[in-house]
Image (cartoon, rainbow, N blue to C red; front, top):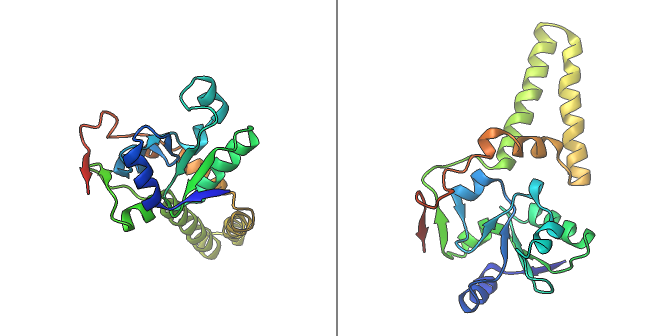
Length: 188
């Protein structure tokens, strides 16, 4: 898959501000901080064919894909390729690398917990609950901890996390307090 460093993309965007840049994080993550030229299209709602058919993306030109650290952008590029569009270019290191390079970002007024941290919190809570219920109520509850552990191993091996996909659909990850842009400010 093709990639581009954040600083190189910034140079391209300075010369051509209309380049298509899709941020595939959840709306809440996007509202917290994003690259000013990025358009939010969450990974679970991404349909490259629909975007091209609706002329929202230019055919035959690169489409730059961005997420928090690169994992979801890679999945988005794979989806582009599966649907017959090989223009997906992943921004190396995602929004984190963009911020570390001290490039301009738009920040919202609220802070959110990243989807990756939400998965760790949920998995840890379920394991702890299973152990406590297994110890104090009935030994069968240890199965909950085993199920979550097996799910984490599966997610690590396949790079597919059902819990992450489920959490991404939760209401607190769908609300964007920055939809109008009135709560955001550009930071350089």
